[in-house]
Image 1 (cartoon, rainbow, N blue to C red):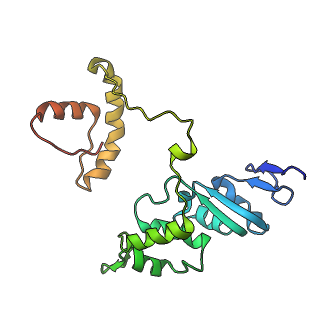
Image 2: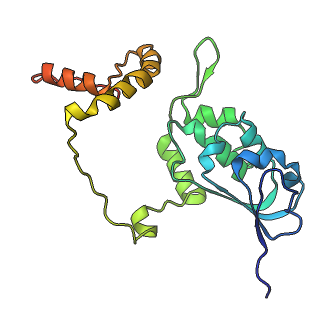
Length: 212
């Protein structure tokens, strides 16, 4: 039995997929090697698969164009916001079971026509979807089960002297200007450390929610 020939494909180099057994390719250069979609693969593994959730992205099109007999997606965050973000991954793995984005959205994303087009940002029949995923497509593993060498999570409060935080506060003030502009349109308040300190001192008896 010979050892596997493994190679990490690098940008600007000749394509090695035809002469190795295992080829490792970064997301950023997949579309620079169209040969990947021509080669015949036994297994395609997509790590951090949530990066291909957008069906219109060039990265997604390049990755899903790579044919293989078997496919595996690994990710720590399969759903970041809403069920529709799962469709591209499921369609890639099982196009026969998930053939249509619109059909998926009507069943599991509370699809509705708002007068300007279809809105797929909702959720519906979530228990049914979870049952399908767990029975056929998704295996969930917790860190404590697969990385037992990791120490328990620790939370620690570190107090900073206000007098020594002047530079930090100045940097935050500049960087948060952009965030303020973005979040004000959504009715949120974005505060710097100095503002949080000031607000805290003025609101000892009240409770407010801030986006920081």
